[in-house]
Image 1 (tube, rainbow, N blue to C red):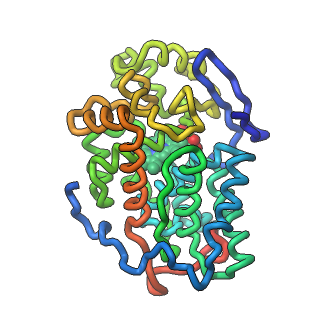
Image 2: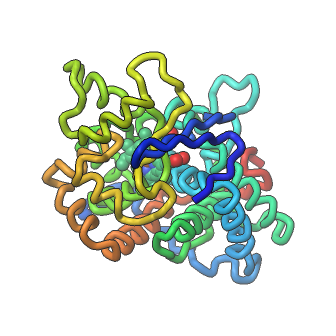
Image 3: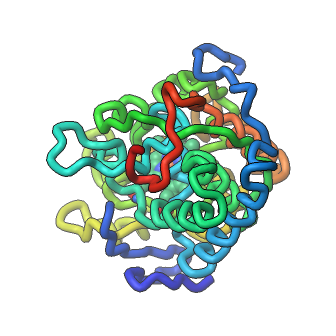
Length: 346
Ligand code: HEM
């Protein structure tokens, strides 16, 4: 597939494809908490009267972005994840920090700095198109959920219906991000804890991690695995030596280009398939947090199942995305708003 992004240079090294991105903005069983309550008012046909063509309008933008700038797909799917895990799926991630304000908005938090601008751009464009036909009717949070679904499907993944009726949130604070977003070196214990706190099961977590079948990660997110894993001066023994060699070529221990990224799935980085799980079984996981899923007794069998059976993965992924897109949804004027410009509170 050709990548038409003016700021994207492509290098090919044997099987592995590396990209340098010149970015303007850096990319249960245990149903415990209150976040699991599914708001009754959310419905697939929520806009049937007020904006019946909303899905087509968003679809016109996502299909164009997919052609013109394929990185918009992974960027938007990750954007939804980072939105839903902080303050719920309320488009709080899209708010721009106020110049001069003491508290930065979510998007400027350290853990969100490498969210790619193509995701934000996709939602901005989709909102513009929707606003022309249905002014101040459709929330940015619903547009983000629809766009992420579209990209999963466009890349070859499953199609699922998106329930709508979210309102946009009134709070967006960088300080709320850190503890809610898992990191590349999070342990399986930590991952389970964060996902459980959002009402998501271990199966949901392993299925959602399958989103790493597309997209890219910066060297800094796996550098210690290449040179000094757990401070022992050695590479991670759970990384395939071929992958290690290839990654070391582009990600030197010191002084490397900070814009270089490597694909999660070296063979099909733009195709939504189940190759991610097979890669994990071959010790080809990019992040320590991904590779750990194939090793931990609580997650290993799920990795095996999804590696074997693409349909099983697709079903679990679609169901988990539906659940994730309903985390702590905001409803009504007291806590919510319907923004005209997704980057600014009303
Ligand atoms: C399980 C815990 C997770 C961890 C620790 C994690 C961590 C990361 C990291 C470190 C990156 C690379 C960022 C960069 O260097 O630019 C990334 C990228 C990505 N993540 Fe995750 N992630 C997790 C779960 C998820 C989930 C649940 C989804 C969506 C359902 C998701 C979707 C993505 C996508 C699509 C990308 C590629 C983004 C791009 O190419 O622009 N991740 N993730």
